[in-house]
Image (tube, rainbow, N blue to C red; front, top):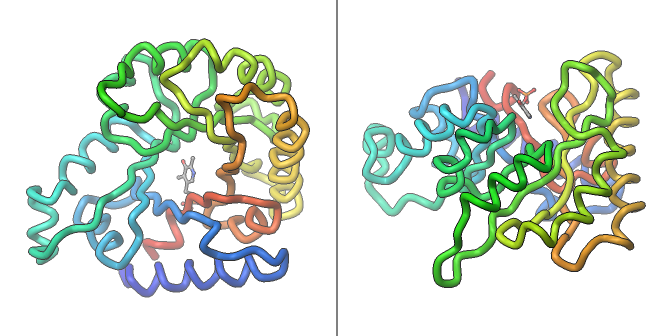
Amino acid sequence: MEIANNLRRVQERIARAAESPGRRSDEITLVGVTKYVGAAEAAELVAAGCHHLGESRPQELWKKAADLTPAGEAASAAGNTTKTPPIHWHLIGHLQRNKVARTLPLVSLIHSVDSGRLLAAINEAHTPVNDQPPIAVLLEVNTSGEAAKHGLSPEEVEPLLAAAPNYPHIAIRGLMTMAAFEGGETIAAKNFAALRQLRDRLKPNIPSCVQLNELSMGMSDDFEVAIKEGATIVRVGSALWE
Ligand SMILES: *Cc1c(COP(=O)(O)O)cnc(C)c1O
């Protein structure tokens, strides 16, 4: 595995995809998805310069976050004796309510909020002390309509945003989606455009505690399409681990 080279190639592809819509590549955050690999490979990705890591299963995020703390074995195994850069963990998969409390202290952003019940559970579990910021989340939207996918239907998003003032310990920062499994780039582009259009339509009427600046969309097979459609965060796994 050529992790550093793979990372550089993905970063170059991001930069190139940003060019034609006239966007700057530093507006786009690359989340390296580590669900296929162990802590040692994840540590290598961090050392190569990717400081945002994503996991889809909470238990796996807990484990890797522990393994990748500076005192952990992975850091020393990677020969990492100098100061390790901070890792920003992203939960990109389904979060069960009984796993909320243990997950919150570890994550920078939860991409996958898909119900009012989950919002309420997060709000209740996060009691900010001192100046601790609220928990940053995205609402996951099922733009493809595929039954197997998690996520809110597009119609469910507006009422949830309207209820945001009931959850003062949460900051809703944007929306997330996954493209349909089938259909290739044309369908993916349609799904991504649908997320952007939903955001643009809702934005004028959101409560002042909500921001919808982030659009998390695009994976290894379709992140270039997503960037053309306005992604601010891409979640890339397989392309980093070839
Ligand atoms: C696995 C996963 C990814 C990364 O997928 P690749 O096709 O391997 O890049 C992105 N987002 C979510 C929600 C995932 O579960």
